[in-house]
Length: 308
Image: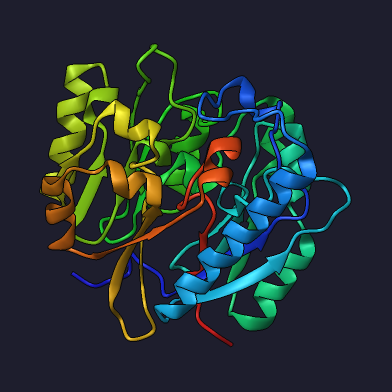
């Protein structure tokens, strides 16, 4: 197996107006309004972001940092993986977003900066589906298995089945979709909250998939495509243990990035299972994940593009 699944280059957006987003809170149950001064939350988020980038670079993981613009305010700009992604084919895809105020995150200058540094074969913009209330939020909605040309997705208000199927078909991927819900039976808003796929392992909250036929089908599909399944609980999902991403250093060493909260809630057995495949790299982003309802994986967009 090659390591086409993991990237050595990441893009991150340094926040200018981070805060609680009431538009996304309609279906993201992991957000919390701390009722603090916006400036205080923003300052802590900046510090957490900077430490995150520093830790990645200390481990020889390349990071392209883009500064967010102050106007218009974009409370979730720190999560760029939802509005665009790159594919190993060299394509850049722009996605239709659920929350109107998140559509402001789509900035041409970010794409221009990518095109200066990397070879882009094509740019596809699927934003027109927003007018029809069809949404597909990038690598939040879809967990790619690039090696086996498969894409996993839990259906929700932000991940529409017809659009998922259309997208997968257009890019030669096979969709594996299912329904997943939290302890209260509320649909999980993004697949990457409950699932992560590395090169040779998959972290997944199987108990969130209530339909047993679907649960078995997803687990078997992961195993048959060469992944050790590491199961996590709904309680661990609440601590963002599903929101991991595997990357590699410039020397090719694999790391699995997650929040400190996610790492701390893993059992010794889970940590040991993970360590066989990849070295854990926890980062402290407690303010960002508490207020934003997204964690370490949401903050990075992989760059699967050749350098210019």
